[in-house]
Amino acid sequence: MDYQVSARKYRPGTFDDVIGQPHVVQTLMNAVSTKRVAHAYLFSGTRGVGKTTVARIFAKALNCAQGPTSHPCDTCENCREIALGNSVDVIEIDGASNTSVDDVREIRENVKFAPFRGQFRVYIIDEVHMLSNSAFNALLKTLEEPPTHAVFVFATTEIHKIPVTILSRCQHYNFRRIARSEIVQRLQHVAAQDQLTLEERSFLALARASEGSMRDALSLLDQAIAYSGKAISHADLELLLGAVPQELVQELIRAILTQDSPTALASLANLLDRGHDLRAFCADVVEHIRNLLVAAVVPSTTELKSLIETSEEDLNQLSSDAKTMTPEQIQELLAIFIQAEDSLRFSTHPRFVMETAAVRATRLLRPRPSDSLSLQQISPSPNHKPLDASEG
Ligand SMILES: [Zn+2]
Image 1 (spheres, rainbow, N blue to C red):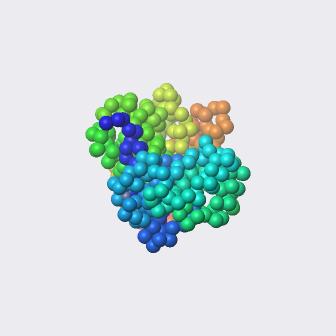
Image 2 (image 1 turned 90 degrees about the vertical axis):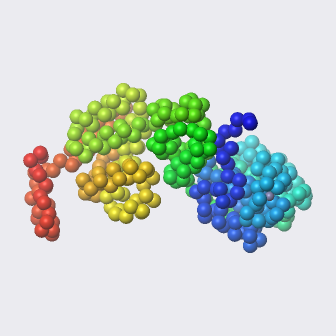
């Protein structure tokens, strides 16, 4: 069998297989089964979240030999041709390379003809925001009086570039970024199918690097396979992703919790020695402290899982770490590193910015001499234990 990239090999073929977009899928399925199909749809959202995939499945639902049906068979000739991009009734156009008014005029001419095999002529226009103004105007004329058999599905990563006149004639669906847990699940499925060996944390690292894009996650997995073969070590993967090793983030957090400035500075030096980017590191530290804050104020484990996208093990660690600080202290920590993240953008001394933040953070939790007194005065609880002020 020919080599196929994972994103293509594991592309969902039916609505039931689509991951992470239940709101869109449900509405489209209802539209088909209640025969209330609109003439124009606009799918927006970041790259690799399933816009074109869902557009194709929708086309199958409309033109399946057993359809229109919300459960296209995915095996009839129509479905198979659509999956391969060969259907005469489903026309896929890349808006990025067909931007001119002539391209749209051609669509306007062709849309009049009745569908050849299915019941609808479906036009899927990807990257539709790339069309020129005159092309949009030409398109608008078709959208104003579409033939009954015509369905347009526009996909875009840049919704703000779509003219209002077009927007107002489309049903608009926003595709969300896919949750890390859903990406991890999918990657695990692919790994099982292709007999790959990866560590648990490697799946999470891939999901983290893909920033909510399933296609990116699968492409990164392909790159890892190309680099390491079927047994992918976590060290290789981190090298490939250029990702900040999470143990260095953990090390800094641990130094902050134990008020250990020398270790905090040493872990930054270690990070720089290994050639990692301070900005990426700072962003990861900010995310970690944000997770601590959430863990500190949300008691329910189920809710925590939906708010913090990480492994079970990390979640337990976060919860126990969060107990060692007050939410107010965590907010202060967060403020320190958000400020550092800001300064890093412009500073010519990124290392000093980060070191200053680390030292401030490690000293933040040290009780000041006045703390035990004022806390005792404020606290209404008779069980309150004064902080040990000996270190301050
Ligand atoms: Zn079919």
